[in-house]
Each structure stands twice: as C-alpha cells, then as structure tokens.
Length: 105
Image (cartoon, rainbow, N blue to C red; front, top):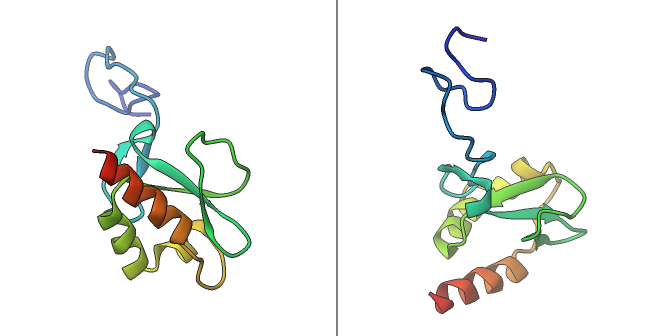
C-alpha cells in the first residue's frame, strides 16, 4: 500500500476520508457510482433478473436505473461478458422495470 493511503478508499491524504460504501461500474455507460445508486442484475436461465435487494445468488452486474444505459449494454453485448454466460439473455423484465421507474420520476 502506498504511503498516505487508506485501506478502504485508496485516497491519498490525511486518512480522514469518509467511507462511502462499495463503488461499482454500470455495464451500460461504464460510469462508476456507489452500489446503492445502481441496480444489481443476475443471469437467470434465459433472462436477466433484477436484484434490487442485492441478495440473489450468482454473478452480478450493475446498471443505472435508465433505459439509455440498458440500450448501451445491449449494443455493447455487455451481459454475456459481465455475467459470464454463453448466448443472449432476454432483458424484457429489466426493460419493463426501468421504464416504470423512469415514468415515476
């Protein structure tokens, strides 16, 4: 570890950096954000399953609650890479959930 870094944040300085929780990367836009700001998804048998409670078993990937990020993830074929599955996954359940959350705002 570098001199002046904290084990949790990696920030250089006095060591009084506040712990903000885990940081994850959105598979769509590739922006980093707090895990609490992103939706975790896992691979089901044939579809991508939303995991808002972060409790489902299996490899997870994170995405912003925006249909635009979902479109980017599909265009980049990010699900197969991030979830390490072979073949395409159905995202209709996730798309419906994201569309509903955008309508609420």
